[in-house]
Image (cartoon, rainbow, N blue to C red; front, side, top):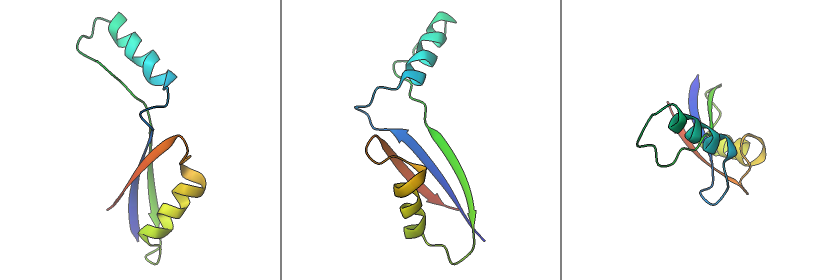
Length: 77
C-alpha cells in the first residue's frame, strides 16, 4: 500500500478570507507577531501499490485542487 500526503494552498495572489479572519482573531486575542496567515487543505491518501505519483498529480489537477487558484505539493510516504 502507498501513502501520499497532499498539501493544497491558495496561490499567493488569491485573497484568503479564512486566513485573514484567523489572522485578525489572533491579533484580537493578543497573539503578536503573526504577519500573514493562510489556510489550506491537507489530504491523506492510501492507495494500491500500482498507483503512481503521476496518477495522484492527475487526481489533484482534476478534482482535489483547483489549479487556477490553488497550488499543491505531494509527498509520497
